[in-house]
Amino acid sequence: MARSRPVFLNPMQIQMPVGALASIVHRTTGILLAASVPFDVYLLDLSLRSEHTFAQIANWLALPAVKVVALALIWALAHHALAGIRHLLTDVGIGSTLNAARRSAWLVNLGGVVTALLAAGVLL
Amino acid sequence: MLAFMVFVLGTLWLHPRPSYLEWRSWVGRPGVSIFVLIFFAALLSHIWVGLRDVLLDYARPAGLRGFLLGALGAGLLGTAAWVVWIVLRAQH
Amino acid sequence: MRLSISRYDPEHDRAPHLQDFEIEPADSDHMLLDVLLRLKAQDNTLTFRKSCREGVCGSDAMNINGRNGLACITRINGLKQPVVLRPLPSFPIVRDLVVDMTNFFKQYHSIAPYLINSDPSPQTERLQSPEDRDKLNGAYECILCACCSSQCPSFWWNPDKFVGPAGLIQAYRFIFDSRDQATHQRLDDLNDAYRLFRCRTIMNCSEVCPKGLEPAHAIEMIRLKMLGVDKEGGLEVHRVPPIG
Image (cartoon, rainbow over all chains, first blue to last red; front, side, top):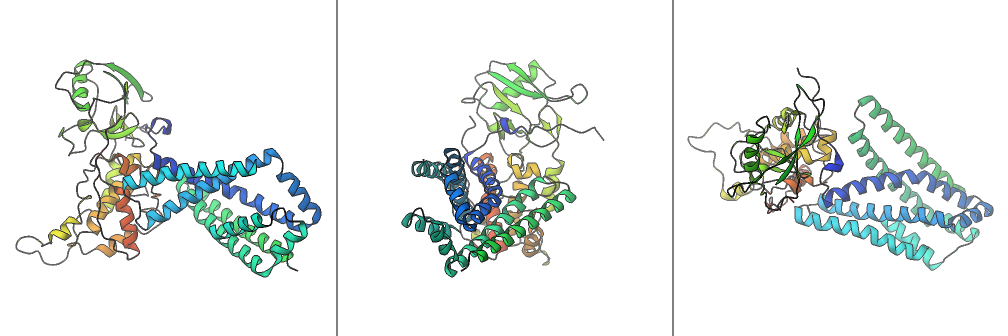
């Protein structure tokens, strides 16, 4: 038939409502957190291996750059967990109408940031 | 998983900055060890469900998708084995 | 009033591009479709679908300032200018604002959008109580305009395997119809990794439906029914916020 037809699919030119934002950040934080797991298991390994490696890790965790990365992961975890709870609730039919879903998406997005700020206060 | 994380955070808050021996003997306690293993079992299954979803969405060619899912499965099983080894090693 | 409209002529253009238009709307022009028809006097090659001009046929669905809607019920008062008009996202573009709806309708047909009842036909109607009829509210009003499916990221990535919000709200309309006898088969048909379960409740569908329907909630109800849970309440129809 005709040669291949073009499509319009530029995400920068398509509106992203608050629920869509919560959803894509849920996915992205999930991938980030999953990627960090092998590294976290390695930290656990070293921390239990010997007095020497335990001390190494304690020193390393005190470095500011490391604390910033830890903070990013804490934000990721907070957002992912809150969005996950929102998902579980819509799965049982709570908050799956549009207005309720918009409100819960706002709560999730803000809640993640607030938790990160609180953690920043404790860590830094 | 949430309960476990709250438990660990709570314990650390009550006994901050443990020494190596305190840390290791705490993890080695049978109750804590089992809790750790259950946490990781839940975590790795959770990761499987989540990343499988991502692969189903974005990995369009069936061969590539099958391969990546296999790699993911193998990676998770390997991590599970690693965690079991770490926890066993910390036993008294 | 200023507009930027996506133009594409397969004979002459390699890719779609935006063309600027400037027009003085008449006093009687309230809706975007009125302005588009008046623009045809400036450039009669401007191509778009339209029919009922009252928001019930679904022909003039398009992407307006980033958000899908029906041109005939989109008020020009309050639209951010220049008004950017593009074809529905992810559907192959035939020309200008006209897209190929073949795959969209293929997904619709795949859910068996007709009553399945093997009892012998009665003299008049198959009876249904008003309560049972009310269960179809919020789903039967779907006009298959494709605003929802073309704003759904899951449908963008897997249009051939995911049924999409429009197909699924139509599936709801038959699954929850008391006169239909194929409920079990309908639910089985949707029960694989792709047909329904690509839905991640992103909820763009409910956001953009020009009739105020909520496909995301309908999909949720189908999921619960698959588990054997019959939730009370039915579907809501919300007031559609104006496109900005």
